[in-house]
Amino acid sequence: TQLLEQSPQFLSIQEGENLTVYCNSSSVFSSLQWYRQEPGEGPVLLVTVVTGGEVKKLKRLTFQFGDARKDSSLHITAAQPGDTGLYLCAVSSGSARQLTFGSGTQLTVLP
Amino acid sequence: EAGVAQSPRYKIIEKRQSVAFWCNPISGHATLYWYQQILGQGPKLLIQFQNNGVVDDSQLPKDRFSAERLKGVDSTLKIQPAKLEDSAVYLCASSLDRVTDTQYFGPGTRLTVL
Image: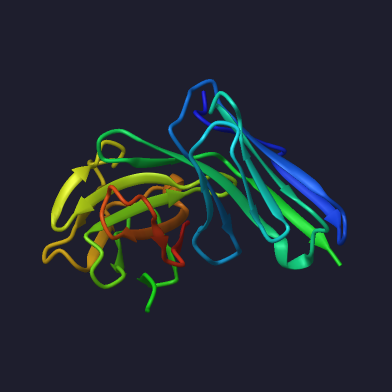
């Protein structure tokens, strides 16, 4: 069983459309991170959410942490081809604060 | 500021051969991580160093994988002998310290085992 379940696994949309991807778990987390990974590159941190119900905005990206701190969503408004990539959620745990990643949502935005 | 450097970027070997990957973290970063990312999955932590000491290697297949960070800066990850299932991208990341949490990733080495 995966600690973090991400959905959908794949998403292909047209430029200008809106979309939401999800990261769910049965566990409670003190914080959750979202990364974007482009082909041939490593993941890049987009945001960290720490408070239940928290909403953070990064230009056209809106991140929300669930009230119970078990799940999170990422909403993209008016998607652009430059948003194409693998979106990963991750949580840190343990004394060494190891990161555990979900399996990701592969987003393709078509021009 | 220079990012995390990794080499080689690509490597193709046959099963049972050996391979080594190199990582140079961001200057001043005490914590270094090696991850394995199999196609269609998120990265999985293999080993974490704090300076030149191992913090966590619980998910490292120690019968064939080894890693070192002798002087607390650069690190190498070795696979000997390689298996088909080792085909993956090997990512190196570093952070200022393990409490800060923000990890910066290198571009990875794509390994194909034939």
